[in-house]
Amino acid sequence: MDITTEVHPGKQTSELVLHGRFDAHEADLFRAAVEQALEDGHHNIRVHLANVEFVDSTALAELVRGMKRCRELRGDLVLVSPSDPVRVILELTKLDAAFDIA
Amino acid sequence: MPHDTILEASHLGLRDLGQWLDQVFEAVGWSSSASRGAIELAIHEVAANVVDHARPSDGRIMLSATTDKTELFVRLSDCGNEFEPSCVVPPDPENPQVRGYGLMIVEQVATSLDYQRIDATNNWTMAFAVDVASDTSSQD
Amino acid sequence: MDILTGSHEQSVMTVTLSGRLDALEAAALRNVLDQAMSDGLVNLAIDLSDVDFVDSAGLAALVKGMKDARTVGGDVKLVSPESADAMRVFELTKFDQVFTMVSDIEDILRNW
Image (tube, rainbow over all chains, first blue to last red; front, side, top):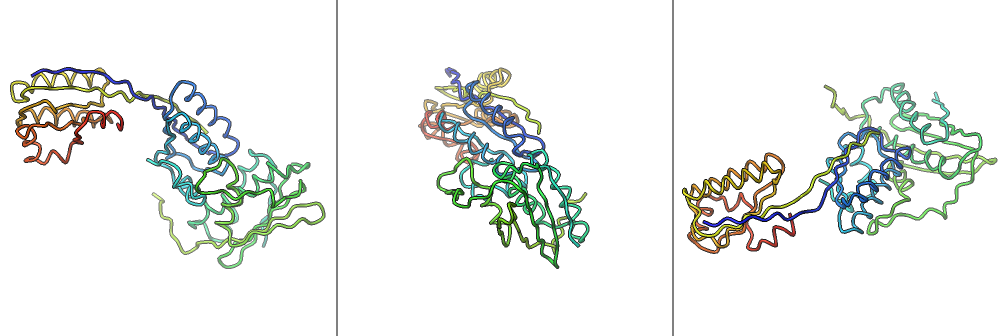
């Protein structure tokens, strides 16, 4: 039997694990983390939200903005394991249909 | 008996809202209500709009809450810029936008939302139906 | 709020086999797969289109590779053999439903 192998480099994925309160006060911090990932060439960003205890519409706006930035670059921003507060706001704003949620 | 508080009109100041709301709920015996999270979010969104748009020069947001059976009434006032309803663009679900979800959230959660400009102050009144029958037993 | 960041690459390694994948050849395949895993390549696409025979020993090597990969968040996906003699063992054991099996390597690479 012949065996030949080849490695195909794939897309770099950034994992952002958020912990705590994601409100307007934290918007700049999150935006900077997203911009850093994009600058590093990681157009796929997975945002882990299991440990986010509060999220408001400003934070949601940052997630939308990040998602649009990634999609412009043919990547995506995926919401991973959203906590209940995150799920609630996604449903209230009907953005649960706009995001890829893992 | 109304529960009053004053929040500092800044995004950091808004973080005291949760504690105040906890006190209000506890005083009435609503501690395990499932609707508490959504109610806090709604009040927070109105207060955040005051911080971002009304920008009261005295740096204060006045909050007052009363309850009646299973309803919560919250009045929020400040002495900042007048609210212009025509400036609010309702979000389009087909086209996720970056801003503008605050009032949409409040309208979904509150049973009523009113705004009045009285003597150079902004006054928001909100009513909420509180889910008191639930037992959110995620207690260990 | 704290934000912890990390990153990883989603490389896929293709392994193209031709000939017979039986008990004699299974060991060679196992070595290739083990080596890939220790090199951190946990996404493996194995192209069986040119394989004319697979027996249960060959299948076992593929299954072990798949389980090892899935344990660390990767996977082993297969391009189905064209030969019926090679495909038979997958159908009889129902492993054709456990593995992702496609007809074209590009399907795997594009959609991993």
